[in-house]
Image (cartoon, rainbow, N blue to C red; front, side, top):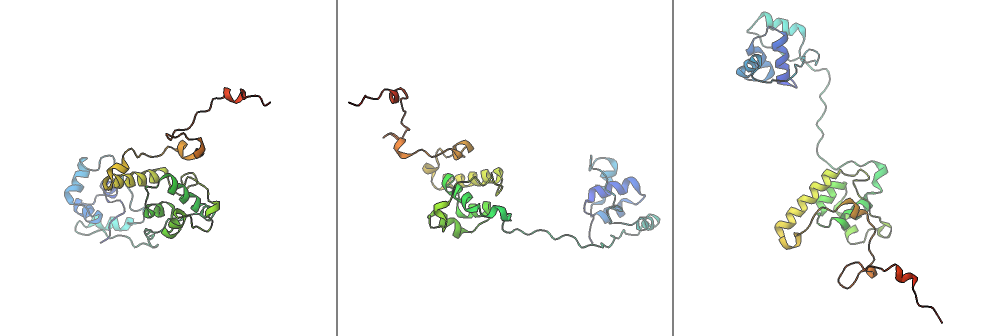
Amino acid sequence: MSTPLMPKATAVWLIDNTTLSFDQIADFCGLHVLEVQGIADGDVAQGIKGRDPVTAGELTREEIARCEADPAASLKMRARDLALPKIKQKGPRYTPVSKRQEKPDAINWLVRYHPELSDAQISKLIGTTKTTIQAIREKTHWNAANLKFIDPVSIGLCTQVELDQAVQKAQAKLAKDNPQAAEGATLMPAADSLAEDTHPDDLRADGREEEIDADSLFNLPKSE
């Protein structure tokens, strides 16, 4: 037997608005009779607002009146005129057509700034194939020369929460498999990920960026 969409809220309404027995309400709502009694006593479902099953199309006034007149009768759910919506099954993430052309740029950003992410994680975040991800990693993508670095969050391909969770999961796996490689790994701040690259020629031998003395630029030796 089917039960109301919100059993406890329906039970609250039936207790407050009908003379049905606890057994009848419990049977209709799929609850234990002691639970229904607890709702009536105020010990259970405190703060739950009653839900009218008549307005919801789950009962009729005539059915309630019939069972009120006969305590041995059982409430029957009203036949639904419309089919219930189907539950959406898990599947590939849908991406608007206007955003699909930016997917390779987003993948390129993830590959560069979050190399710890697996192809499966990137595929789930962006809604793409592992073949495309591998081609971008290996720079064999048909448009590799023109790819940009675009944060997928900024263009709505995934949320910041989803990205952070994926990165944290990847880093945890990395720490478990190779603790030394994962040491010091953190989420990259947005400011760093959007900053322009430092050219190798600007780095000193020790790997730090070379500092330029501004005054020296104005004190160049005079040419003879």
